[in-house]
Image (cartoon, rainbow, N blue to C red; front, side):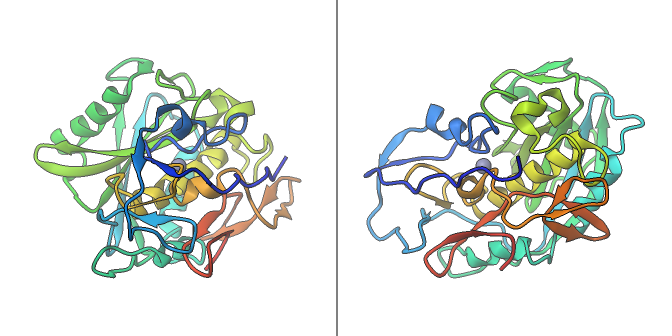
Length: 294
Ligand SMILES: [Zn+2]
């Protein structure tokens, strides 16, 4: 199934903070935030008419630098080229341009520019069952060893192979998440995205995919989702709605108009030379709406 119903707009008078785990799964879209949110009174003056509110924190400005950490065993897996191509081509696309409708308290707008920088490998340094704290340690180790630089404008992704579990709810509550942490005095934005082939019914929109690798193609959609949330809500205190849903959460698992690829799979955008099926994102303009471009 390519399209699931859009999440209903929030109507609560309390406000829930994002925990970065709002991706949900196909079976439980958006469950991450509902499980763990903390109620909080809405800030007067923080609202907009676009269905998502600004809470005063920074957004990521300028060009965002993407770093990958390939955790576990990815040898012989085309994911490494598919997802590197994704990160190399998403910046400046009509799809990522949606994020330019977001801005900070000084009216500086997100640029929509992204650059893929480099990667590190991690050969199961913390085993095959990871906690949330382990994910930050994996990022800290990649930076501390010199494999990746300290970059306060970086978006670091820990990408785990199919045999790796994330114990806080990968495959049940979420397919990926993002947050931030202080690593040696620098605010580092990072995300976890696991190989969706570990749980196709929860994390893959389709099992035949445009690039012939269903796990990687499903990860592409989750990476895009997390990257746009890291961009507009890097410290979990900028853009989210009354339910704690960040921009991509509001459109999670919806794909808009799709086309059929030569192998029969569905896609909805071209990035670089590849076809991808990537979930929509929320436009913060004209009253707000899910879209594939802006
Ligand atoms: Zn999310």
